[in-house]
Image (tube, rainbow over the protein chains, first blue to last red):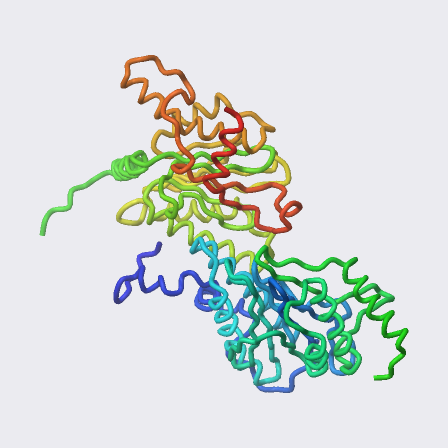
Length: 273
Length: 251
């Protein structure tokens, strides 16, 4: 509204970025961003970290699941943390790494997608969403180099397409499309092994939930930073299913049944490793 | 250099107001009304993509008449304001009252300080927990702001439409009923014009030209969206089929 004098066509100059909340905040309120470009020197204090996230495709969509433990060094900082979030109606993201920054990046990403949708009147394409997330992770690179890294996993379904897609990232914002399944975080090596054995093409949604939960149980078995299902507190992993109908969280009762079946089977087998 | 003629401030403001009013009166009308199930926003708008009604935030919608590029820039500014505020505080801290007062300031500044006032009239609606918790604000081109209770009409034939609404609107109606009232009110200027042209007395209400669903833009703020759809966003645009269905139900 202000009579700003641009060098060319003012509306067109602004038009390139006006649909992005991230760009808008970077210009107008950079202090609101979860990351800043410069941080003073010094030893970093211990901060809570989130760990294992698994994601896998199944017939008609993608699934993402995360355990509930946040650790600070060798201590458990939180038993209830959620690391998998809906990004918008048709996509979800999970985060491993420094919890404080990761949760704010999730919030920023959720607003980014909603903002675009409201300004433009249409949803961003799945590729577009994945690229925007990459840009945000890249913006966090200076912090990552000082030890506050965030590594997300992104999954979604493009409207009108039958199958879901899965994207992983490195700390520089590099974006890689994954096929079948993927896992990030400190327990991911163990989860990945489990996924390789348990996953098969054409899983149903229920089977996919069981595979994801079992791979998280395997990760928690060998990685101290990954929390297993907590039968005392009745804490189950956070599991989201994304299909053409949208993203939906799997209910507590369904997860309890899945966990109990796996635990009962393993108890009966009494295997050591 | 040419001599600057003195024009009194009263005259300047009056000229600006007349100019803006003329611009707004050329357009078609928009109706916003609250009902049991939420708030309905209905516009006569043949374009399927150039919207007069838009989502601002979880419980807040925007409707406008006048010059498209001007109200579109205001809508986008409103979305930015709401998203920044919700991101830096919390989603519940974004209110229609806050947004309306920011709009009032912008419009007021443009009206007095810029070359030309905005030729727009805006409505900012916020759906509450119950019908008495709804807010509908009307914002004028000069920055004046009014808190309307229940319903408002603005645009080309605002007075006729507002009168038609006032005659019908009641608290506690369902959404389909509210949509029928809104469309009947939007049709009333057409009916009057048709009646005047044919010389017959006005039948009052929707006796004249019927507005088809395709020439209507309809959106709703659903009061129970969180419970029924599991989303914090209450704004939903209705398709032509849904509109036709709702309108057919009562006739």
